Image (tube, rainbow, N blue to C red; front, side, top):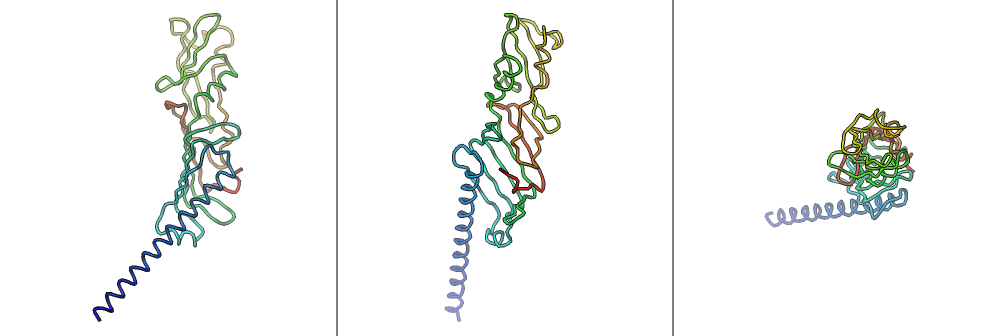
Length: 226
């Protein structure tokens, strides 16, 4: 009886190991397939990384719903706009039509060069990161002009607004700038129309590489992705 009990425990152990290995293999295969699909559906820079959390995995697969999915990429093009260091966290991701996710949170960085291009369309100034603000610099009537720009979210849109202005060696009020310079510096919008449907921009802060944005949504229609 003792030998039989030992043999039974060994058999159960082997079954458990086999199930664990099968579960891990299925998870790895699903993550690889998801990464390939992302590369096919989106303009991704480099190979995206996909991680599916939750153990065991096979019951999630059988239920056709994944508890937590995390994806990241070095860069993604959103409707012509390049963003970097992209991180996406999604919950309750369905594997059958209609494809949807219970919640999605997206973080990405809009590079300083992109903001610079947008500002240049309104006023001829160069943009660089200066601590917690973006610093635009140029000339007005041959006099050095600098303006501190702060990103903010307005009705789900990304804008950069003037915080302070200096002309030459002195600070001045925005309305005191000559010509229409003040008008061209106010309410500069960085287009982010390429965000997935149902994902709304919530926050924007200055980081060393540009502007870090955060967007999220619930009951997101994944089938509407490009």
